[in-house]
Every structure is written in C-alpha cells, then in structure tokens.
Length: 236
Length: 153
Image 1 (cartoon, rainbow over the protein chains, first blue to last red):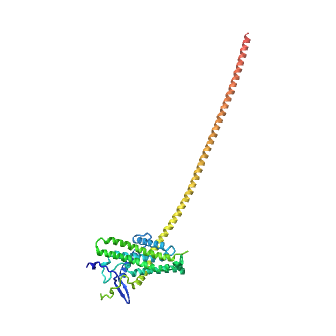
Image 2: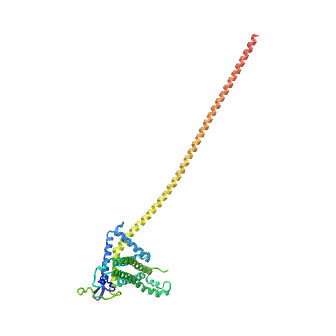
Image 3: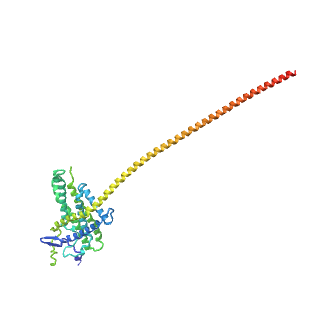
C-alpha cells in the first residue's frame, strides 16, 4: 500500500499513440497546463499597459529587463535584440516547467501509467531545447557572418578545429543532460524522501529543489545566449 | 484501459526518445513567437519608450541646469560690477562733498580774514585819526595855554 502511495515511477510514461508515432502524454499535459498558466499570467499583465507601471505589469517589466540584461551581456549590443525573445522563451519555459513541476502536487492526479511532473524531467524536452539552441547558434553565426562563421573553428589556430567540432556535439549534450539530470534528480530525491519520511524532512529538500530549478533555468538561458554570442562574435 | 486506447501501454524508460522531441521543439518555437508578440514586443515598447522619455528628460534637465548656472554666473558678474559702480559713485560723492566742504571752509575763512583785516584797518585808521585829533587838540590846548600865559604876563 505504502509503495503504491509514494511509489517512484521512473521511466514510465503515459503513451499517446497518434497514427504511427508515440508521444509522452504526461509531458504535453503538464507543459500545456503550465504554459497556459504562463500565457494567462502574461496576458493579464500586458492587458492594460501604462507608462506608470502597476502590479503585474511591473513584475513583467522586471522580468523583461532581467532577460534583456541576460541577452545583452551574453550576446552583445549588436544582435541581442533578435535573440532576446528566444532566450527569454527558453528561460521562461524552463523556469515555469521546473517550478511548476516542483510546486504543484501533480501526484494527486492519478494517471493510468506514468505520472505528471516537470516537463523538463523528460529527456525529449531537454534534447528538443538543446537542439533548438544548436540550430540557433548555427543560424545566428551564418546569418550574421556568412561563411566567415567557420573561421571560428580555426580561430586562434587550426589545431582547435577538432575540438571546436567536438564542441558542437558536447554543447547540446551537456545542455540537455544537465537540465534533465538536475530536474529528474530533484524529483527523485523529493520522491524518495517523501517515501521514507513523509513529514517535514522533505521540505528543506523541496526548497533546495526550487533553488536548483531556478538556477537551472538561468544556466540554460545564459548558456544558450553565450553560445549564440560566441557564434556572432567578430574575431580580429 | 482498453476503452482509452488514447492511453497506450507502458514501456520505455528514462531515455525513451520518440516523437515527443520534435513536437516539443515545435511547441517551443511556437511559444517563442507567441511570447514575442504577447510579451517581449509590447513590454519592450513600453519600457524603451519610458527609457527614452527619462533619458531625454535628463538631458533636458541637464541643459536647463547648465543654462541656470550660466545665468547665475552672469548675474553674479553683473552684481559685482554694479557693486563696484556703486562703490565708485559713493566715493566720488564723498570726494565731491569733501571738496565742496573744503571750498566752503576756505571761502568762509577768507571772508572772515578779510572782514577781520578790514576791521583791523578801520580800527587802525580810526585809532590814528583819533590820535591825530588828540595830538591836534593837545597842540591847540598847549597853544591856548601858551597864549594865555603870554597874555597874562
């Protein structure tokens, strides 16, 4: 009974079958709920924009400013404007997913299989995000510098070529696994602690989880911006 | 379970990669566009408009401040020159009055001296006239005495 109450369902998914393709339903369900909440929040905040910000608008402006600073410091004054929405979306998506996964008691909703949780605790989501970042920095480099982008691979010396090529693979790998590992590990730790000591003891770990979640969102967005900045940077 | 073939069978594992990946990527790209039009653009417009407003106001205020300082300096120099002018006028007037006083004093002195001199001369002349008369009378008297003495003899 107890194992059923707080069972750890690792690697179990709620499968949706559409034609030939199979999807992890729980990931989409939570992401739709969380993104819906985010969009509602943002629509409420931007409904009546005033020059003298109040309430939600103030919070959204703070968030906007935070994202702009992040994008500007990493990408640089020249092109940060083009990439700010993407960086901001990454940050908001990861942040909302992580915090939503940690804060909302999803376990109360029973699924036939698998369980609801942070969408970022699924490897598909994090790889999707990481591949988008890879595509973005290639696109940013090529659209800003044309074929000169590939000078980056031999930048200080041609010896760097194999390492830089290797980097193109390690970047998405590290991005996706860092996020996936941190969020999944946090869910597992909280799950194990709730399973072992259901009272009080998990609370500090839950707070730690909230902290990690926020930090991971910041790290993901910052690294994405840094990679784009690296791609558009002019070497002299 | 069978009624919901929507919910498939369980399988997979932690690293089960399937169509969730591209669909999630598409979802995130769509979210980027939605957030751009719903959040980044409108908020950016408002914030940047305000930043522009604030910075132009600051520049304007700085210009005004420098203008005020310039005017203040100008007024200060004007004040100083006015003060110097006033000083000059006062000292001039003082000199003038001093001169006038001296002149008046000299004039009065001269006048007094002159009238004194005149009086002295008059006194002198009257004295000599009186003396003359007296000596003449003395002469007459002595003559009279002499005559009378002679006659009585």
